[in-house]
Image (cartoon, rainbow, N blue to C red; front, side, top):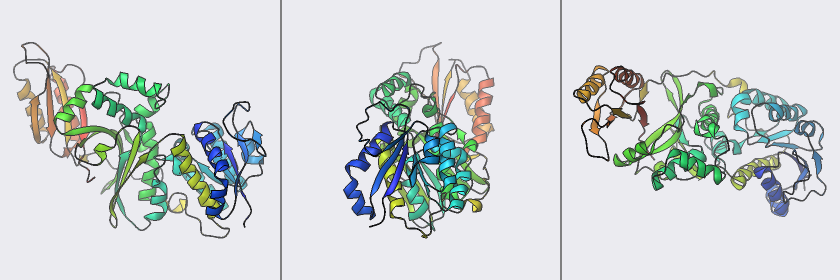
Length: 439
């Protein structure tokens, strides 16, 4: 039997502690599956005295993950520290530079430094695996890097943040406000004390940038993503969407166009009868559209200690099964030096139309003015209705809902800006894209 694969785990939070427990309690099963033992030889975390429910016999403790990456007697460095800079970046660079394999769950690190780290790993002939960085327990990275090689992808989209999906689900099911649902998500541990990274869409954007590179063979460009979060979604939007036959989800979408690659993260209305509309709570879903396979929808747990630890474990066992001299899978789907420069497409066209909610003063000519602005910007309306739970009363502000046919992003923005200048709007207009996915 081959020598044991020695693991060093940096970060013993929920995921790290869960990973070490799995490696320890299922050691014999993993040995049979991989053809060699896998042992935890070193760990690093801030507090050595904390009881994490793991056995420390024979494990070397390091207070500094960078020191562990440089000094520990290990074959694989597992980075679960988090963050795009500092200890996470320094330790991963040190580990790769030393010639260690690396496994990470850090999407922020990869979205910022992924191309550089891929080049370093490939120069050293080592694996850099990161299944847990996107969609938790869903094996989307392995699917793109290995299983669907040869497919030409046209679009990737999905629900990639469990916090946002949980909030939107609770708003719809229980009629709660965004603020109330966020508080509940924080109480249950689904949202951080500072939830802005999730609810503003940044977490989804990091994950999307990685999938975009794997699907389209371009350099990672997380800073070129059109970004909207869910903080402006109101219970009125949720109700209006349901009345129109839609459900609101925060989607990350990347697609190829004639002018380049379009990446966007924003709230989206999807038909109630679509499969992705049924993905509720903290569950994630990723859809891949390609020329050979067609469409594949992958659904599963997107976060949590066990789901993320399972993905990290899969990356470790892949390394355990690999053999010296074997052809390694390129980190980003193709050799890093062959990645094409990212060519950003303008967000001009949109396949599914738009939902526009306007709160207006109740005065003569408002309907006509709105219709005129739409017509002048060549926007075809599927419907324009007054939407209110209360009877119309003279002087009471009125809510007007417009649903457009497929149109240009720029046209919608121009029309809305023109309506704002007319002086009868109350508050900010709400604009939500409508997608009609195949699933």
